[in-house]
Image (tube, rainbow, N blue to C red; front, side, top):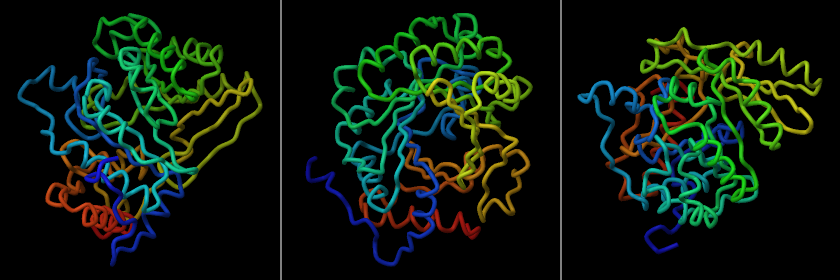
Length: 343
């Protein structure tokens, strides 16, 4: 790593990191977006709080935020927060393998450490084209979105004619690169007839898969009736295994965890409840919230957002980008204020 990306102090003076470290210990994650661009346009996309592709395609007057972060900023932020106690970092987009920033950042990441992890979330279509450099980066796993299992459902959900073969090929390419590859599948009316096919595909390849109930946002509220509850999926999994337990760890939604022939199958199930913190107590949109306090999000525009539904709680990091120690301190204070309800 070059000198400009050297590690910053873990705990700047005057910052109480207790809330942040508690969040990290409870499986809280940092989601780092490399930008909103994507080669598909899934109708449910929330683009980590930015304007998603389906909206920009339909209305060219609505544009996502401009880029403010460069590779050095990303690496400094991740390094400082990992040193402060963060354990889990997920790199997202848009489609991260479209952004040139992805390679620049991933190749310069510090080690995640024995308890830490780096994961890349991708639609899979660009994995094979980038496999040479992906072999060299310190990712612990890749999570591939598989919300479809045919050309028809791929088009209905993602508005693309790329074809399901491109996604499945990306999964196979990822398996050849990474020790751990996981699948994500949102439960929707457009794919409910294919959920068992997705499950069979995962089991045949011994890939963990997570079935997820839809997170409602202002961007997808017009199609809220397409959401499918997880009850039927849970009932079917119970016919395959008796190895089931629930996890309610203190961030986000609870989940049911099944093991089928040794393969972990997760179901993010709304009826297990969700975790809220101090700021959530007076939140005007809490009734719509299905996620709870689950992730801190860093976007390419230089913002930190602790809640997907509340743009007004977004912290602008741009004035602090030249001072990594002050940047980390601001993130620590913002997280504490959010968890204590004093933002």
